[in-house]
Length: 294
Figure 1 (cartoon, rainbow, N blue to C red):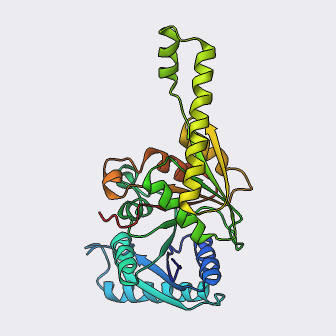
Figure 2: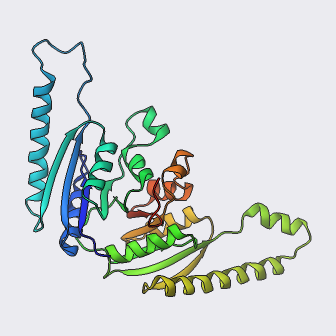
C-alpha cells in the first residue's frame, strides 16, 4: 500500500529540525502529501498573576503566528505538497485527530524529553501518541537528509513484528532490510538445567537446536512477508541486542512491533520497545497489527 499522507509533529524546540528534514525526505521519496503540525501547550491557564493588560487571546495569536512562520520556513525547501496546522492545547489529542482527519499513513515525531514528574511516570507526548497506535510511527533520533540505507526489523514471530517489517519495507523500499530474531535462554533457566544434572554439552546442543529452529522460522517469515533481505539470529536479551545493533553507524532504522494502548497503560510499551526507544542512536519505526484499534 502506498504512502500518500505523512503527518509530522514538530515541537519547535532545539534539536527538533531532524524531524522536519526526515519527514520532507520521505514525502519527496514517496510523492506524498506532508502535513506539518505544532501544538502550543505553553499558554498559562487563567493565571491570576498576569498583568491586567495581558490578553491571553492576543498572546495565543502571537504564538500561533510565530509557529506558522517557523513551519513555513521549514517547508520552504520541500518540493512536495505541504499543509500547516497549528493549534493551542495538548499535543497528543491534536495529533491523534489530525491522523484520523487526514487518514495519515505515517506519523513522524521526535522522541521528546519528559519535562516533569508526571511525564516521567506516565510518559511524554511521544509515548502517549505511540500508545494510541493510530498509524505507524517513525521516531526520529538521527539527523539525515538521505534515504534509509540499512534497516533492521526485530522479529519475535508475532503479528505486530510482521506488521513492522512490512511497514519498514514500504517506507524504505531501497534499503537493505535484515530480519533479526533475538534468542534468549534466561540465565535462571540455564542454571536450573545445570543443577538438575544437564551437562554443559547438552545445553550447548539445546541452544544450537533453538537457533536452527529460529533460522527456519525466519526463512518462513521472509517468504510469507514477501520482503527481500537477510536474516540473522542473535543471542541474548532482545532489548540489549537490538540497542547494540542500532548503535552501528551502518544502521539507519530499526522496526519494532507494538501492541497499542493496552500494553502501554500497563507500562509495557513493551519493555523492549521502550528500552530501544530510549537507548538507540538510530531512528525507530513502531507499527502494530493492521486492523487493530484501541
